[in-house]
Structure formats: structure tokens, C-alpha cells
Image (tube, rainbow, N blue to C red; front, side):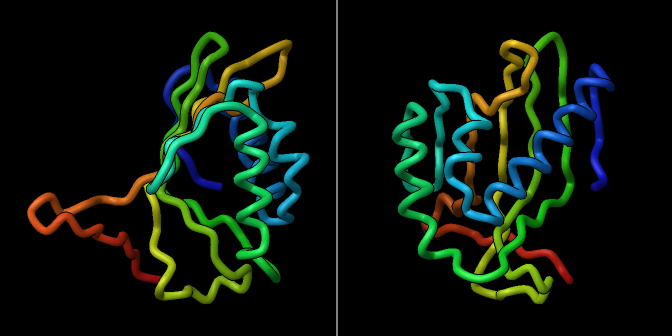
Length: 148
């Protein structure tokens, strides 16, 4: 996994390890493991809503699970990690798509930010923000696509 790191190099590599665990839990739709990787007061700003707390986040993933049947994979590009003193965040482009790697045209890339806080020696997700650009004149989202 290619990434750019600013700050504490050791912490940055711990974040990459945690990101791989996160992506694996998402691909398996392992809601319990997703929640285990979060702070109890985790917050999420998604494209159409926001939520607060691990129970709300858990319910969200339970609602998402039926939409992700079969082999899925988290694809990421342009990963940037900033880490220091028990706090880290990363931002990248990401999307969930078929594990085969054959792009699904109607699934665009999103802008993703994950914030991690180290608690009792473990990095946990404290906040996630997912967005897509919007054309302010037309008020229509502008999907992000990258060439294959």
C-alpha cells in the first residue's frame, strides 16, 4: 500500500496496519470488528448524514451490509498520513467495489478522512468523514473517476 507520511514514522506504520484491519473488516462486513476498531464516541460525517456514538455507527453498518453482497474490496489512492503524539489522521480517495478489480462505472470514488486516537496503546477510529465534490452553481455532485 503506497502512502505519504508526515510526522511520527512508527505511528504512521501502525496506522497503515490499523487501516488494513479496518478495510478487512469492511470487506467481510464484520460489524463487530468494525466497531471494535472505533472509539466509543466515534463520529461520522457521510455524504447525506452524520451520526455520533458506537451504537449508531454499528446500526449504520448493519443497514449497509445487505448492499455489499459477494466479494468486495476497499480501493484507496493517494493516501496521506499525519501522525503525532497519540493522534493521527489520514485522507485519501476510496471506494468499495468488486474485489475482481473490474471497476463498476456507477460507483465513484469518494474523498475520505479517518482520524485515529491512541487509547490504552491501541489506535482507534475517532472520526470518519466521507464526501464528494459538489458544483455550487448546479448543486449537483461531481463524481470522482480515475482512469483504470
